[in-house]
Image (cartoon, rainbow, N blue to C red; front, side, top):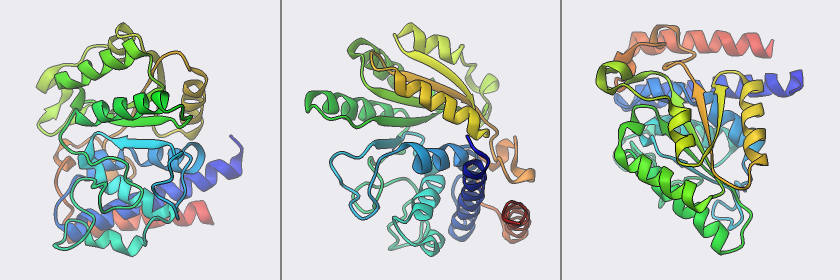
Length: 279
């Protein structure tokens, strides 16, 4: 990836993180930690990988993205706003009465959202359906789904993984492996197996990536593009709360909104990071 492309992605990722903080702060609720950990991934996908039309959100041949870890909706909303689906100012209405930006993605009211999600583990099943529909209808669009590592403790994920592997679906799953969930570390709550090996056991191609390195993300998604005979899972190592120092690797920021002083600290850090990149 050339320097200018990477710099543009880094700038957008900071803006996405600023949008996340704006949203959860003004909502006084939400999930900043796991939203921040996927900001780079969503930035890369919507800038470099997905086919979509901002002015035609329901374009039949668009690539599909399902945010199975739907509580990370602030990251998806901030990304959709950055690419033009709706004004960034609207992020401040997150979870407000009458706002279309609900606490979890809503495909009926939010342009750019392909699947309503939030009940953990159901998103990957919906993504399987989308990928199967593409095959049955002779469509070339790709389907992507983003899962949390805590989420994959749900049995339904593995039913979907079995189905996708058996049907050899054109599906790309991303597991955001940040090591933390609502009640503590994954090891404390329910220790995970070797995630890549588990998916491989169901017939998936497996790739690993650094969730905060755009070269690594690009290499992973380019490899996934070349796999046409089975689904691919990208297990990305990430940092919960990435980009806001006091939130990084702190489980308490899974589902707590920043108060005013916290908000100011976060925005000051992100504003400085943006100035450095743009300077």
